[in-house]
Length: 203
Image (cartoon, rainbow, N blue to C red; front, side, top):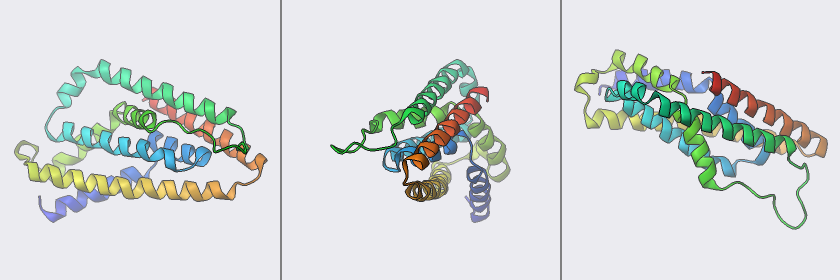
């Protein structure tokens, strides 16, 4: 692909990804409530899900996605259910860590599957790619190299933006030191997580 097309793609994706949706809201809420370590699998799954949506759009498989609409709906509501579960856990989380060890964290596989479900359950991501890509490339003549270029740019842009959100949320969490502040942060994060689930459910 020519450099101008790649720059247009990167710029449009930066604007879209920089405007937080339910996935980013869930990511930030989780970091504020529990720290950044257990959200890395969640973020990685979000990037993988975006790559899958990009591939579907590039190779003209939108019709397949439409045919499998029911399956994507199931995936979406599984993601919604997990986000609501996380919101409930945040709301009820104790504000002090016991002296005999750190608070238990969810398994990485659970967070990975949650991130994948949230991303694959959001068809608006594919709509974005379907609307943008035909304006910068000839989808009928797409090559493997062009797909690799688009995918690499997408992964870099999403990683930079999501990691920036994670860093900012982690810094905000460090400011919260008193039990009262932690309780407020946990319940605010639970509210954000629940709102993200509601947004995803109604899309």
